[in-house]
Length: 90
Image (cartoon, rainbow, N blue to C red):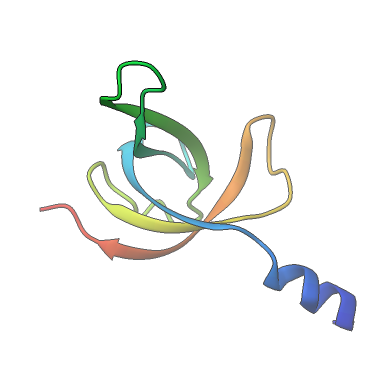
């Protein structure tokens, strides 16, 4: 592994979110909900982002909170890879 590759891997984004779907093979849909202040009204509004995450072992279940990282494109919409569990669903 070259020095450039190692440095590049260090800059990859990592996120934490909740699994909302595990219907696909080796893929889970993860949702991140954040609160954003409305510019005019001033109230906080929920904004959500959904990511398709590669789950090689099909170990993630709906409700799990997971950490995932950016990776090369694996399919048309899948650019993230599962790293670890933060919290398991009951």
